[in-house]
Amino acid sequence: MKPEAHTDENLLQRYPAAFKPQGWWGYLIALTMSAVLVYGLLHLGFSLTKFIAGLANLGTFVVLMFPPTYGETSDLIRYLNALGETVAIAFLGTLLAAIIAFPLGFLAAKNATVSQVLRFFARRSFDTLRGVDMLIWALIWVNVVGLGPFAGVLAIMSSDIGSFGKLFSEAIEASDQRPVEGVLSAGGSRLHGIRFGIVPQVLPVLISQVLYYFESNTRSATIIGIVGAGGIGLTLSEQIRTLEWQTVSFLIILILLTVTAIDFLSNRLRKAIAGDAQTSI
Amino acid sequence: MGSFFAFKYEQVQTVQLTSSETATATLLSAYEKTVATQRRAFRFGLIGLCLAVFLASWMAEVDLLKFVENSGNFSNYIGRIFVLDSGPASGRFVLNDIVSWYWGFSKWTLKLLETLLIAYVATLIGAIGGFFLCFLAAGNLGVSKPVIFITRRFLEFCRTVPDLVFALIFVLAFGLGPMAGVLALAVHTLGALGKLFYEVLENIDQKPVEGLIANGGSWTKTMRFAVLPQVMSNFLSYGLLRFEINVRGASVMGFVGAGGIGQDLIEAIRKFYYPDISAMLVLIIISVTVIDLFTEKLRHRFISQRH
Image (cartoon, rainbow over all chains, first blue to last red; front, side, top):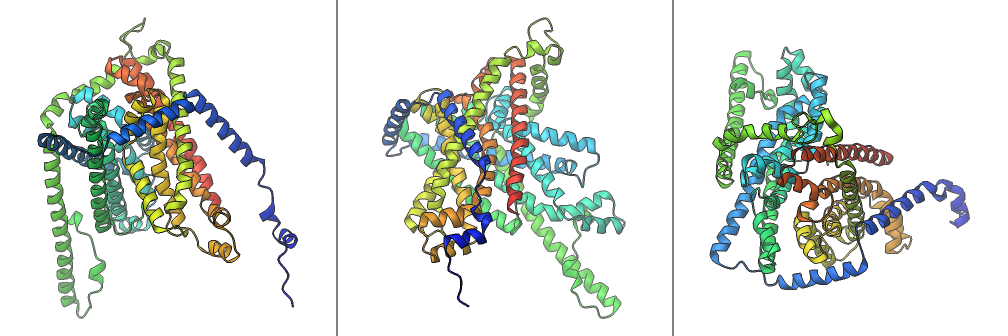
């Protein structure tokens, strides 16, 4: 038998679904989204002249950034010190948040909690902690413990307790219940069930998440200095405001290198500790 | 505590059973050995962690004494922002007089809407940019190596420099106002989404692509009919996730003069208008939570469509 020729007509006959019009919903959504976009651009004061003038300014800044320099050796030492402080803030903030969120995560997980009321409150508290941006936390902590890196540590801790609490409880809820049943049927208590049934399953996932956050917190820690909570952000914003572009580019390069190094380090650690444990987004 | 940490029997089970007595002895010694190795590794890690904590505490000037001294301040602060400081109900809990707590409701709501608009426009611009660039950064679509390398480094730069640093620079270039905030968030979004997008692209099924190429489809047609249908739902999901993140980011853009509610918030915090702080924070938290819930529903719909 001769195979049928693939003409447009018989393709249409054989796969009607593939040629069906997509419906007007898609167009309506696209239209609304572009309308809001246009309104937003107008409302937020976008104009072509402003944009072009701004780009020209930006071009000047970029030209002025080369070559990157750091000035005196004493300045360099100051910058490196601030950079170390930044990494220290990220590390301590993440660690404290992880330690505090660990028990709270169990409290907020459906399969490990002690009471539904507590679970509800734990989840809402996480939402509240996460809803406030880290920089706002930094401002609040600066008012409480004064200017300096310690406020930064507490700011990272506050906002990350929320994120970790949510992620940890989700990981715990996704764990396999059979080991827990095994422990319970062998006469273990509920606490034993959690310790030997759930913790070994979720620990690699949790550690891997904590390392991810350490990376991203290193980035965040570079900016909390803008509100006076320690780290390199203060120096950076000072240099930007005084238009010292060559130092600005030097500091940005320094930050990029540090973040890349931390990325590399935490990647290695994650592979070593967690193997190929899957993390959700 | 010791027995609480020692519970691992997988390796022990493989020991050959000969007679019950020797078997018990072998089992015990094998068990001890496994546990001892584990404990050593655990202790080693713990010591390393303690050293790192010590070093970091020194770097970050952690002063526990000062913390204990000032820890009362925190609850004090939280208490104060929920107490009215003017009007007839002055000195009482804010809920006693919601009208004077939210005296600036219309002003703040407008600012909040501006914040949401900043996040929306920035996410959309960044996502469109990321969408076009991700095809040049994916390693499996026949793009030349140098192009991939340059695109990836560019995306890396965009997402590693914090958005607030871009905002600081853009405020000087484009002037004070929301435009600088939008552009700063958009650049950061471009970098973040571009990376997520090209990772999605690299995980696609290659068979439809091969099919189109074998039938003589051009590069653009291959992308449109073989690649896009596979990745679109993931792209949308990531875009929505980014919108959530950008709403938070936009709420602090005002700290450096780049528009949104942050301007009013930092003023209230710096000038100690206590009840205003809580009023604005509650507004922000509510809107962020509502948007989170809404986008989560939408994302689950997009993702479940695929399976």
